[in-house]
Length: 185
Image 1 (cartoon, rainbow, N blue to C red):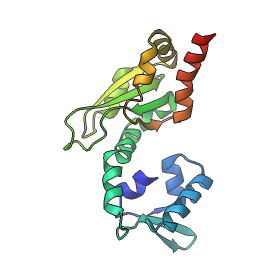
Image 2: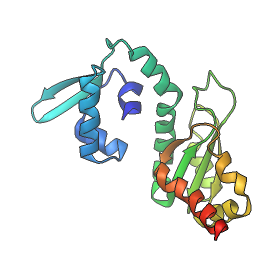
Image 3: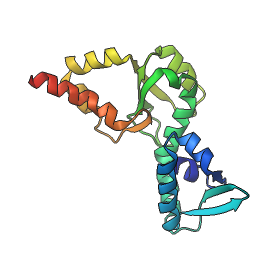
Image 4: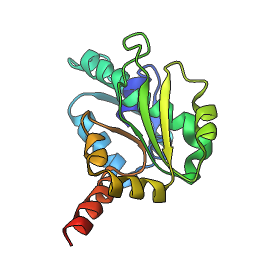
């Protein structure tokens, strides 16, 4: 939601559009919008039955949030949009490397993709992006085997703050937790 609103600060979005683009529940989106509105970070306007929200460029922290979104969240949104045609077959897509804008970091972003897709399909989907992305693709079964075979692999994924573009972080972390509980048995 922040990526959408602060990544496109000159545009306004109605609630259903925000819900659709974020994939989050409408109640959760409504609570977050109310909190951001209450903090003075958003503008709200009504047009008939539609309620629109837009980033408040006059907010004292607008520039900092916009920079943070540009470095992290909006890049994740760009990856999510690029992978959208494959999303039904992807369990998780997680940006693990630098998410800075292309001009700030020449190093490719590392992307871990877990699902029923081939590496070439992922590479083709990401080809139009301005920043180079280095995808590593596993099936869910192959990832579970890699975690079992290499105990340090899973923990190494979280050295830098990951950006989840598809899938829930807690569900992903449970993959590693199930590995450690099986080893203790």
